[in-house]
Image 1 (cartoon, rainbow, N blue to C red):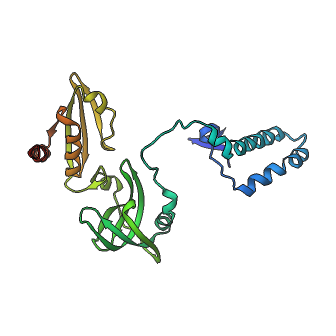
Image 2 (cartoon, rainbow, N blue to C red; image 1 turned 180 degrees about the vertical axis):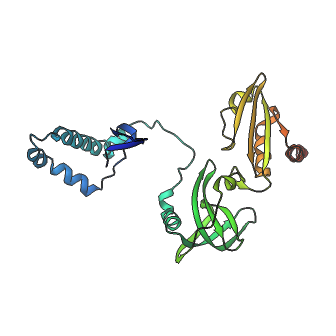
Image 3 (cartoon, helix red, strand yellow; image 1 turned 90 degrees about the vertical axis):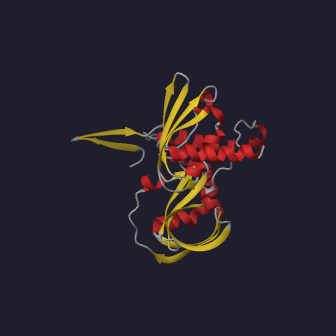
Length: 268
């Protein structure tokens, strides 16, 4: 039981206190904070002489500091040191989706399909919410397409959790995620091999391409390999790296990049 962790190694059992970031975060409601603060003198008097009285006193001190640090005046006086131009995914706003996936309940969606440019109603079986660098996605079995699909949560216009439950279908999650690149999903899955030369390699080596990626240094840059679907999205990423990036394989991706580059050049 918290805060003691138990680990087994054969017949041996090891116990240790959970400390620092390994300890679970506790969230108090306002009335609970107030109750603990107001009850502090009575609690400490009642625990006087107990072996854990000092621990309780320190915990109450931390609680008082947390309350003080979250006052409006304190927040306003502190400099803004963390910046982001990207919105944090609002997972709590989609709590019904999480709950439906855990309870295995059907969900009716009104969904805007970007590739088709139209809004459709679908009934889906939700399995996973997947956070990608390009957004939050729902992996679900679609009754219309009769297949597992990836839905951008931001494109869901309305949803309703139904009372009907479903029996889970077999899903190879790793294989499914291999079909997605930069939020776009398509087949076939390609074994991609890129050569990125200097000077672009200096910053491109730090980029995230795919969860299956390997990046190996070369004398004149880096080589990037990964296995993924989403050919059009991969081609767009290659073009975004400029002329220092060359597709070594597969040939069909080389041709896709060449066609896209020619179409871009034709506009200028």
